[in-house]
Length: 462
Image (cartoon, rainbow, N blue to C red; front, side, top):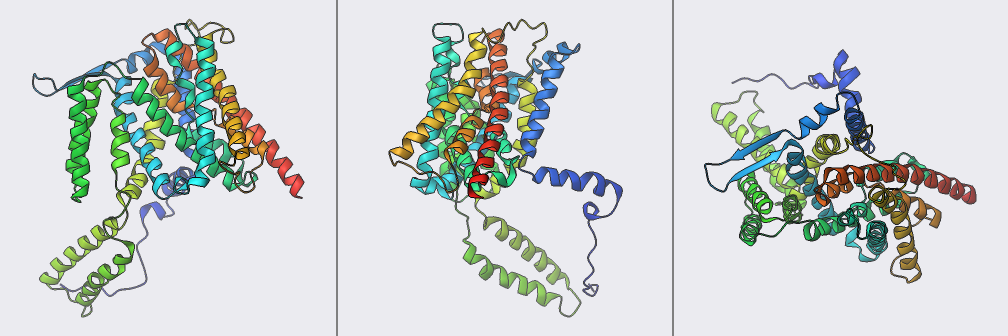
């Protein structure tokens, strides 16, 4: 087979062309998706749509949609699952959300800020305060009341929203401040996952729990054997999810365990890549030197190209590959769908009373706004004075105060824990109102405090 001479000209991809759709739609959307604030914006839009829909004349269609039941069954045995559409979002799709959270936690432990114990000490202690104090605030307001079981609602910080607030300030806020908030939010996620796993479970059924443990053990052994096909992990992941769902432990914990089991080291070291790739490239180059490719050479090139692709992929660790894969799906699909399914609270004619006197509303709202601010700032101050940790370079105490308030944006996981806390729909809706009020107030006040702190900081340095 003869081949065309090689020239410098390359065909232009449709997405890179000057056509109307690529220039006016595709590339602007690509630029938006690359922005750090994009995920938070999409989630906010979904929440606004949910609230507007739930309080519109068509509100019945909103609740009818998410309460729609569906059933999955294998034969007539115990492999039977009944869920509403909202439960599918909260129990199935959110498993991927927690899988991503676990990947981020492992990345920080292996390669990131948690690797340096001293650098991680301050945000870790701050996160502890940011979980404990909001829970206490909520518990004090709801002690002995019908909403007492929701004490875990204000404990979690929403990474996407909180980081988006700081990103809006651009270079006014030191890069170290953003790293502090991100590390704090990751530590916060660890605490939230532990709380869900221990305190928000139904009665345990140990036979199913053992089944989940065996599935996790199978995934671990498959990784130790360096089995690279996704099929066995998918089967074991679905099995562990179903067993946990039936055991009483919340099924999303399957995503957490599988995320933490994901290998952080590549199958091939980077130093090995060039040495292994060069013979493959040289063989392909040799086959085209005479401008004629025989049938055997063509087959060899196909094999060589496949080997190159596999080598390239496996020189990245599974952890990095899965982070790159799961991140956009979680930020732009799963979390917005979750917001659409859970943020729709009927306020107009929905039976929600005065939020300023309702403890179930005030608990999450003040827990997030006041509890997070006090907890994060106070624990940070004590940690620095006790020399457990140190303030990052360029970060002042006014900036810490702004970051602490921003940590009160607890949208996603707070709404998730709300759905686990109550069986009563009225209590759930009232707590959701508190989460929304507390998160909005924390985001706005945190932004203003950081803007003020950064202005003072720049005037002092000038």
